[in-house]
Image 1 (cartoon, rainbow, N blue to C red):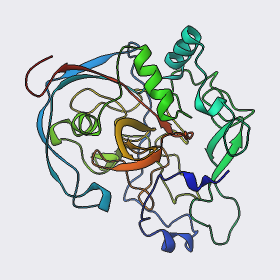
Image 2: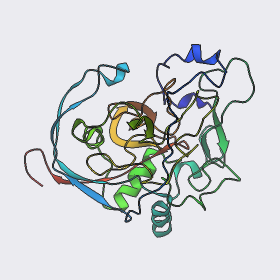
Image 3: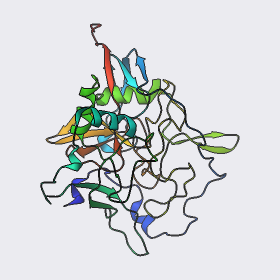
Image 4: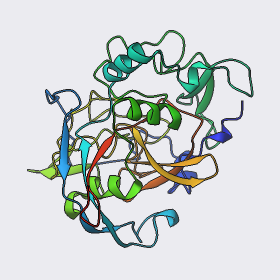
Length: 311
């Protein structure tokens, strides 16, 4: 199985330089970040209605695929406050008997499995993308492969989800996946969201999203309290009242990027300042629709008003 099928990050930022600097002091701060310490008690399947309208989409400041910054218009829609959780996906599977893509035999190997992030060990050069491993038996029930479990993570976002899996859940819930424009409209929250996963308060850097702190992929200082995914709602909501629109796990949209390739948004717990840096509303990435990973999930929407005012 070629993990080259994963296309989660384009041009690395200063990655080559980072690989030769292994000291723990490579990334420094004027004052330590404070961890997110509590999670919201949110009702399951909670949604917020947005009126829609015109907004600026994309960015001219970061990656080429985000350009150009331009104006877009979306109709009114309701969007989930959080990503779909393991508990909610389990209810769907229980009701329908659905079998995810990762639980079916893979065409290349004949065995079920999926892609899992494994941090490199030891010193020396690190080949880009070598931290992704095909793991037989990895799926939404055991995201890191045999021996892992979601038993204590039922309130975490479901992962190891291919596009087909997310779309099937949405259909069952009488909802759908958001378009990329809808997703970015919701994530940007009227232009109030910054391009960093922190806010500063009294000289302290407060995490507003679950991302990687430290030198990716070598060490994570865990300043935000989570090495992998966090329970949904653990980080403060944006101005629209939506949690985890940036960081935690990537989210599928219904917008295609090419044949058998979709668009994911939001970044994940693996995004770091030295590599990826996609914890921003404008960030986007192409992802093979038939492959999940342990940092891709989704949320759903319901249309309320079309652009022309019709429901």
